[in-house]
Length: 386
View 1: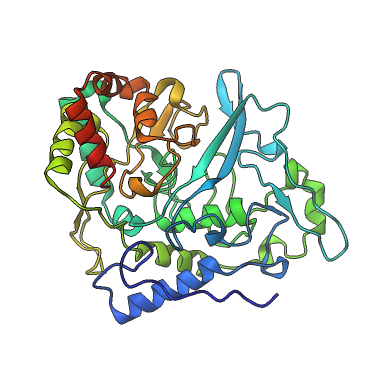
View 2: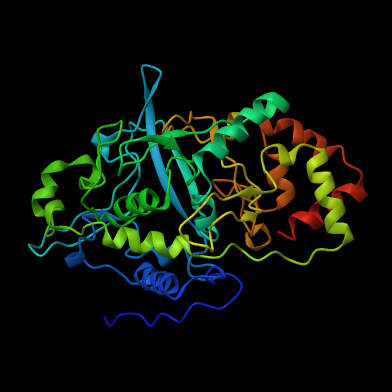
């Protein structure tokens, strides 16, 4: 089929580039955006198993780069000797629900959750707006924030998910994904390239589980099927495509804020009073950055990007140093556009999502139930302005 016609990015609002980009940065943004929305084919290395043939297939609501509340990824694993086992030998930890037909006529079947999996987690596709600002926050800021919480609000204190940068091999702070398991946008892009499209790329180091982003996903763990791969790993792309996707996200503006009035302002006071802001931090600041558009910028994601123990609300999956009960604080910017909430979409209203908080979120949830009708209405007005 002919390549899709990709409309230009809006100049403002959802899906727009950050203000203040240089001409070169805007060119990188647009090139990355085009690649993000252009379907890959088998000759590009798609498959053998995959979930989508382009990133915008899952990141498209409110514009290219948005989430999609109808699309979910599936992770699975089990406990072996009390330790999380991602069942790599059976195709884990990410389920790929589609397979290609290879040039030699082999039809690769989609993966299924194996019966050995005792932990199965569904995760919704999240918006990517403003991720460049998050990427530009120094690790030291997150470690300092965790230390501050441990001193001031120990009952709800989060911690940094220490994870590995697969380009440098260094242990760094995780920021992206439901478990904050990816430390930066290049790692985040490379991981999605492989796990969602089945396209590997060169130049990565081995992670703590012994896996590489430039190793193919054997369908359902069956390595014999790799013999039918028309574009095996050594011949697949280098990091250029991964970096282009990262550039698009890096220069993607945060979601615009809705109208602010006295009721909304009163609601933010309630938000802090009942403890929501303990984890959903109201502001962060980027560090010094080669891009002026990202350098020393204060922004309001309403997340600390730390992992917190959510008790039974956790998904059971372990990634990096995040345990099964721990989840990264979900950013609340853009909340007003999302019609399903929490990592698995189980909540369909903001009120439901608050009341489902458990673990370190339980106290704030209990306080929400005890609010007066006036305070509750103000809080809802604030959250619906985000």
